[in-house]
Image (cartoon, rainbow, N blue to C red; front, side):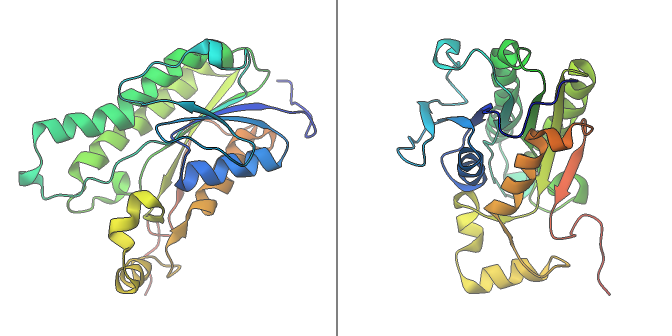
Length: 238
């Protein structure tokens, strides 16, 4: 596999990157000299990012608006729909699955020809620690993100060796999506105490991992679900 030089500009598409982890990643990639296109419902008018209006539920990406070659795709849209199981409706299960899983499928299907034009392309999805941990009130989001993890492994097998596919599974992260769950110092402290590292993750933590997975430095990593969760998924502090 040809590894592109560190100084060569590369093209990345981030879907849902107008805030939180996606925006942190976009800024980091631009600062390294790359071309970054963010497709999201909210426009970005700074940081040197190319912004496209895009709704992952209803829109189809227009390839004419993208470079003919993409070196990486990151699918960021997600939901935090936490309710007791008996209160979750069929439509809520469908909505979570549509945005988290089927939305990723539609985007990959659209841009796959552009990814195949790269000498080393990488796809990064996002899951949640709740898929492996079994948390109360997470039935809908854990089911949807579990599908994303299955998609990650299936695509990694099918698209190798030319396209790598990996998935990041964070714990609760301090982003606009999680604002309701971290809306006070008391809530932040309680969440931090549930993690062995005794802190809540920040957007830049997952963004740095995503940047690594997009780079040639991770050229021997594919089909992995990588947890960035303060130790929650593997450790039980004494």
